[in-house]
Length: 295
Image (tube, rainbow, N blue to C red; front, top):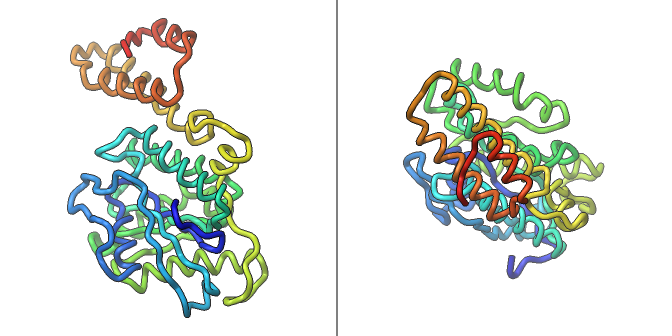
């Protein structure tokens, strides 16, 4: 990020397509600074950062706030591995430049009764990208409460809290209802800053010395790993295994129309080849199991 300062506090906004990331940022800033889609088609295809000046805000003690709008890993306009590469490199370069990560906000559409495959995949990659040591610096924000009944929303939240979010909550992640208002967006930001002060035993307005470091930042900058060899990269690659299992199930059931599943497998393999440079042995392994995809 050009113009980034070591005193900046960075907070990425992450989550699946349609979870309300761009809306959250617009509410926070108080004007439309990023595009918002009215459907499940994503408007965010690149990493976009917005500088929020906070001159008289005691939570920031003179520091600037940088919020980062990110595409979801189920993005309708991009390849998951390419999206991971962009997010990883942005986070790594900001970390290498000395910019401070306050925490991460992950948004989830509470109207969804369960996590579909794409949402589960998105959350799995997010989980690995952050790493368990950063869970206490994450706010799990639930959006669109006004779109369903309160009972339904509470039931969906309870299911999430007892299953896929259970470990993160146990390790300190905060669950927060995020409404479509500026006050709610800022409250969510303050939860991140409040947790930072809590972890360091300081009061609001006091000096902050230690900040959050995500797993993928450590892997790329400190350990010099490629994006594909990171925990998040491996989580994306595991999605290929799910597709192969589904393909086998369809074959065993006598399904003749396998064009869709074969196309998805081919797309995944091409993404892997572009980002990870599949080895000859890996290609041979895939062909042994009937995956003859010409890349």
